[in-house]
Length: 49
Length: 315
Image (cartoon, rainbow over all chains, first blue to last red; front, top):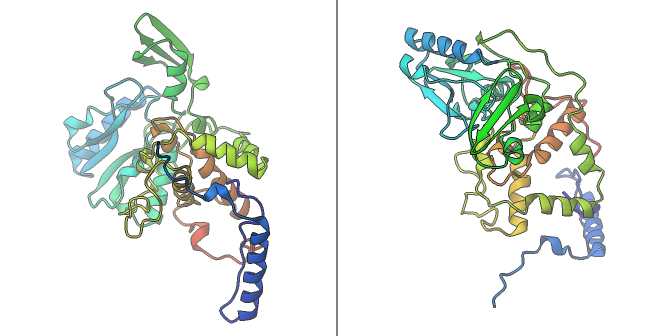
């Protein structure tokens, strides 16, 4: 689709794996923060003259 | 192939007269050249209007969804694969159908012909190998194989996979076709190039949903784009909404699309949205060895678990 690599991540976490869940969420959040916002996904407001 | 029409009319007339079916779905002459329209014949007299030529590109499996009566249906290779998909997905029962199989030699792309003609085409006649388009002050002939729909030129399942009647002997299947050159070209792009490529591809889209309506796979009672509570996707022309529509539409066809080309054919602005469904088709073939609609006995890869399923994505 043209999303930069790293912005989309998949993981498989069982409902019993709470520590893995925390680890993955922390790691993904940090990775995405480092990438910064993606302006391609924001809708532009209609331009008013 | 031009003799097919006579045979189709004969079979349809026979089925309707004997009461074996309540309706035969086929094609009749459209109101403008190269645009044959679906025809629903309910008695032998109406069956006489059935035609067959190189402009029967619409996928007739689209008209089978949830029908209750007995139906005779004219089916090319791709139509028959979508009929199989419909049966597997419980949208119609095999016992309700009499499939009139048509060994197909590909459908002609009306845009390719229109682009090469200097004015409006008012009549088109065809022989076994050629089509001739005439209009005000011009008459041009084309070899059929040069003006085939892109999906037809790459087709490797021209003969119907299921049929009760066959209008002619099976045609030879195309061999040694590289079906996915265009998908590989997109795969080879960098993310930025790909973003730009899809932006250009989708920029003319007017959100008319013709691609969805022409597709036999799109039969949800309420499509996600029409839902308003919740509203999954914006309804305007914003590029992110257009993109969301096209990607989600394609994903709903994963493992089901037969590349019949109805979506591209029906698009009023000529977007080749088949690049999306073809990528999914290629992935299904690479990952699961699956081609949609070839057998009534095998469940599609997305609704069965096999120990050999690829799972490298799990981290």
